[in-house]
Length: 206
Length: 106
Image 1 (cartoon, rainbow over the protein chains, first blue to last red):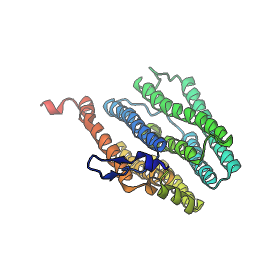
Image 2: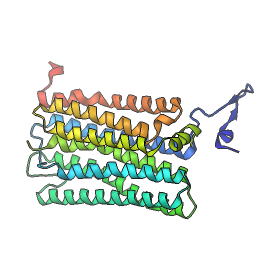
Image 3: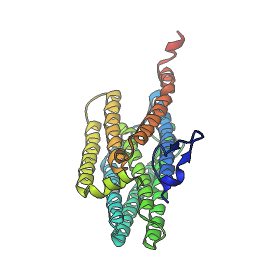
Image 4: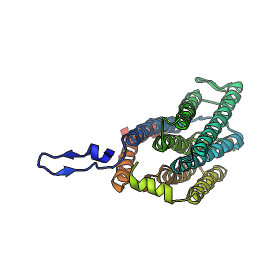
C-alpha cells in the first residue's frame, strides 16, 4: 500500500479526499524545518541589518574577498556533488552515491576549516563577541552569531552526510533519505548566499 | 517522493544541474563585482539582495527540486515564506529613527 493510500481519508460525506501535497512525510517534515529555519536566519539577518543601519560607526574590517570567495565556491560545488550523489542513488549506483556523498562531506569540512581559520585571524586582530578595534562592539556579536549559526548548520550537515551515507551503503537508508538530506544541504548553501553579501561584502574596506 | 519529482530527477540529466551551478557561480561572482562598485551602501545593498534572491530562487527551484513538486506545494512554500519575511520588516522605521533622531514624533 502506498503512502498516498495510507494518508487518504474518508470524509464524513463519503467523498475520498487525497493528500493535498502528495509528498512523503520525511520530505514534508524537512521542508517545514527549512521554512522554520529560514525564519531563524531571517530574524538574525534582520537584527543585524537593524543594528548596522542604526549604528553610525559600523566597522568595515574585511580587506580581501579571497577567502570568502573560495568558501562560496566550495559550498556551491558541494551542492553540485550532492546532486550527483542523489542521481547516482536514484540510478541504483550505491558505490557512486556513497562516494559523492563523502565528497560533499569533505567539501563541507574544507568550508568549515576555512571558516574557523578566518575566525582565528579576526580574533588575532582583537575581535571578540563584545569588542573590536574598529568601532562598535556590536559588530563582533552580530558577525559571530550569524556566521556561527551557519557554521553550526554546516557542521550538523557534515555529521548527517556521513551518518546517512554510511547507513545508505549498509542498506538501511534509500535514495529518498538522501534526497531529504540533500534538501538540508542545499538550504545551508542557500543561506550562505545571503550571509556573504550582507555580512562580508557590505563590510569591505574600500 | 512524488512521482513527478522522482521522474524529473531521473529524466533530467546532469546537464541541467551543471547549467544551474554555473549560473549560481556567475551570480555569486556578480555580487563580488557589485561590492567593488563605486556606489552608496543602500544601492549596493539593494543590488546584492536582488542577486541573492535570484540565486536562492534558482537553488530552491532546481537544486531542491521545488519546480518538480506539485504546484500547490510550491505556492505553499513561496507564499508562506514570503509573507512571514515581509512581516519581519516591521522594525525598519525604528532603526532609521535611531540614526536620524525621532522624525515620527515631530
